[in-house]
Length: 196
Image (cartoon, rainbow, N blue to C red; front, top):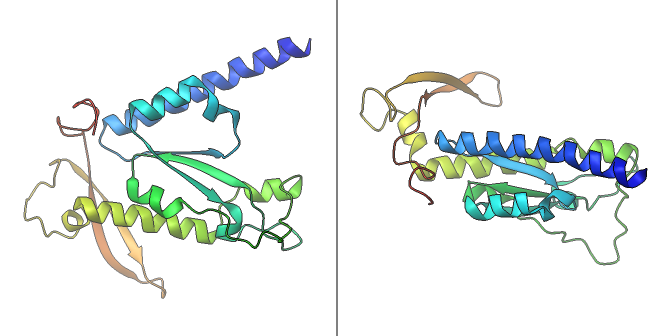
């Protein structure tokens, strides 16, 4: 009975993973960056489905340990729970490659029960690294220059609709407007060319 139940659960979760990978690939085909995060020890990373996907899309991988981004249990001890991330964004992967740097004698908090629930929420330190990685990547691609109107083209790089995003400073006053184009990817996108 247990083997049959395990097989059903694995089939169910495989469907979910296939759907998630399909959404990821569709986003990449549209010219967007995409990122997938699961626990570092998640069995899915060993599935041929995942391994082939990562290899085929030439994704960048990072592992971030919770203790490197201030993840703590309810007693205040750092937890070493790891997240594995695959992404199309190389700078994000660089920002999130954060191994444990705790002294070997340090006793990490255990990631179970209430602490496991807490670990599902990203810390401010992790969120800041994500924003920094994506900002640097976008800057490197020239999208920020486009958003700031330095390109000089009237229709944006897709010539499509625009989404307006307000940045906020520490005073919560708007500090600038960034106009991101929304539309189909250019015909020369990475997937349509068959790789990077």
